[in-house]
Image 1 (tube, rainbow, N blue to C red):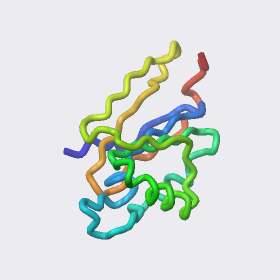
Image 2 (tube, rainbow, N blue to C red):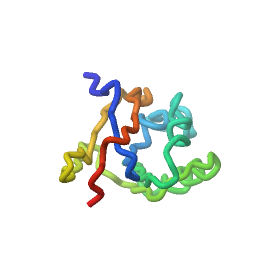
Image 3 (tube, helix red, strand yellow):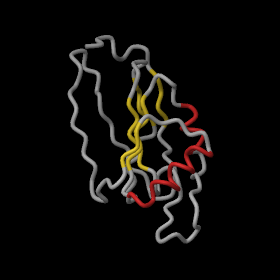
Image 4 (tube, rainbow, N blue to C red):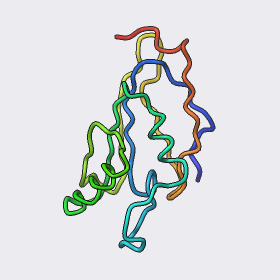
Length: 133
């Protein structure tokens, strides 16, 4: 099942991007078949396109012992992020958020096929997010 919408309209308000690593941004390397992290086509460019005023949080089921090589990969590739959470469960990741009074939807979930970077286009719509509270 492909749950990727073609496009999501987002406000110009600063955002929080919560992104998985394996199979979403980098090739899912199972039991270290490749032996190193490798970006999926388009993933690096997407990360670079996120405005600096936005927050980036990586979630990964990688264990603590994988932390050194993961952080080294991100640093060597000059990947900007604000937080990274290791040992995240392998099951569903559930986000609950409120809708702003002006109707702005404040949470989206996009599920991609493993090892294919997200095809959804995030388009800024200046008509959204007029109420900043």
